[in-house]
Amino acid sequence: MDSSVFIEEISKLRFRSISDTDVLSIAEKVSKDQKIMELYTGSEGSLDEYIRVLAESIPSGEITNDHIVNFLQAKRLLKDAIEKEKELINWYCDRMKEERALPILAAEEIAVIIVTAFLTGTFSNIAKKLINKLFSRKDVSKKEFRNALDMIFSNSILALLEKHKEGLTTREIAEITSTRLEEVIEFLVKYESQGWIRKKTQQDQEKWKIKKGRAKIIEGYLNLSED
Image 1 (cartoon, rainbow, N blue to C red):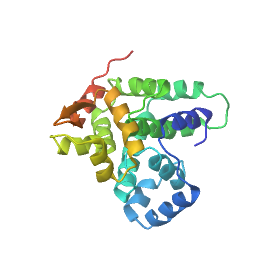
Image 2 (cartoon, one colour):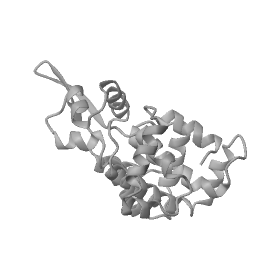
Image 3 (cartoon, rainbow, N blue to C red):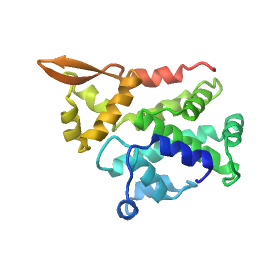
Image 4 (cartoon, rainbow, N blue to C red):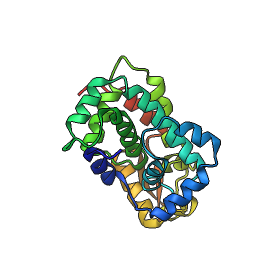
């Protein structure tokens, strides 16, 4: 997956960089996981590439097998739906500045962009268009979308804040997720801008609380109307 659009979009969505050594180390470890390898079967991209995208966008300092499983499952569900949407694939391919990627790779690239956008809370213009065009279709199954988004959000900061209704400070979130404070702040700002969370002052402490739970976020996207 190396179309000009995909490369540009992923660079906009990621939060951190991971070394080739770390990618290879994770890939070697997860290649022994039968479930991950089964889910990876049929993918157009390399496992290393998926690990890099996930590790650079997930709101957690440590990537686990569960993260990879959820990523691959969500990607597969979205890809299956996208492959049926020729108009969406053509729209995406028209954005390419150079013919380096075959149209057959477009569904895979679109699925990864959408998964990454929801993981980070960062929605570029193209990511927004892809989501709107796909989720607003009336002739596709909403069940696949619901399941895919549920997997994407399962390990996120949103899930953590839903669990801690009383709210958490930025530092507490960083400690629980084993993520650098600076990165947590970036995620929180993005999530706040989407209206998913809010900041409250309690006993001279600033705490983050859930504003729109994952279920409401998912339903909101599933009820999109074509723009």
